[in-house]
Length: 101
Image (cartoon, rainbow, N blue to C red):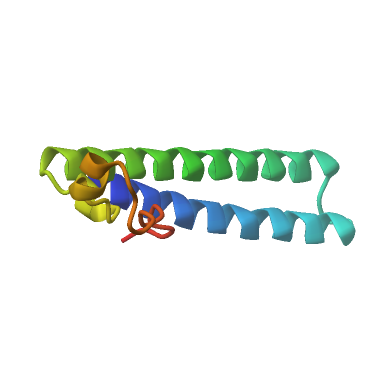
């Protein structure tokens, strides 16, 4: 899925930006950088974090849409139609997946 690749790229970009920000802070502590450059690196890190969250959201939405279109949505979350028809829940549904599959 293209959305999974976009998410993976966003994660790598965020990790790189964290390293860049940390390096810029170290340079500033040593007097080899300016506060302005540190703030720019921090701004870029915040933008990378936002992009990661947005791309994860897009991936999750695409996965749910795919599961719905292929008729696997209930099974993906361990929801039994018999429970829904009877109005009782024999077991709780599975939580949404925590990681990228």
